[in-house]
Image 1: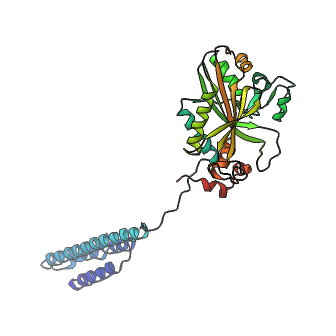
Image 2: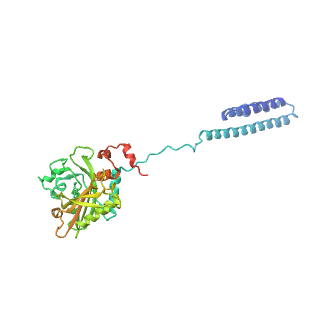
Image 3: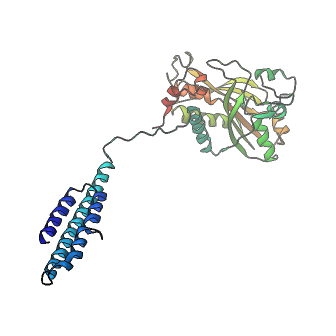
Length: 344
Ligand code: PHE
């Protein structure tokens, strides 16, 4: 029986050593230490031994059981450790791998120019107002001193929806709307950016939809010199400190007098180049003193109040500033164009 136990021990230890995983190890455990296992069997057969032998064999059997038990535990711990190591190796993160770049969105170049202009005027105490793109004939024309049948209506070919409703052809209706809200009392000091629509054929310099920024100041003692000082300041901030502006007489039904405003060429400093077409000056906006009829129709007393207004096209300003040669670039969403204006 001694030999049998010795054999069992060797056999069990060998199989434990060979077990490749926890399941195989469990099979060994059941096979050798289970209730129907060979050691239990040896112990059961002890009745046939002489009484003097029994304690020795019993002790030996327990010792064998103990050795197998310990070998099982040691192997179990080793297998588990190996399993953890395998997992760690499989899930290892290579921190030296370069990341996948995330592309950030970016404001449209036109949005940037509009925001830049807004900021300039906010810095001068203006507030930003916005109004409807679908407008009534009254605000788009009549309240601006353009009664029905007025020939100057043809300056702005319009998209009519009904006889009385159209897509606004300029942001000037916001002059009348804003003054009405102030109920005859100044000061009024706003700029109004927004989309406008004209029945034009699209080409390099025309678009049936574009943007404008309107400006309006109404108060007591507002003079043409205030307009000039404001626009000169604006031109210097936007195009550079050395810039100057000049007024040329013009005509708008809602301003009197009216002017076309030029800025000295920022490319050639006024000497004459392709940007200013050799003149040294670049036209950037239309402006004038608010017509007394417009003040009156919107509820302001023209004897007490005067004002100035101006209107500019951010597309034109952006084209000048960035040397863009075709207005259609702004609306085609060609990423090759847009990516040139990434903010760094
Ligand atoms: N509304 C005019 C236009 O679209 C521009 C303008 C605005 C002129 C305000 C004078 C005063 O051409």
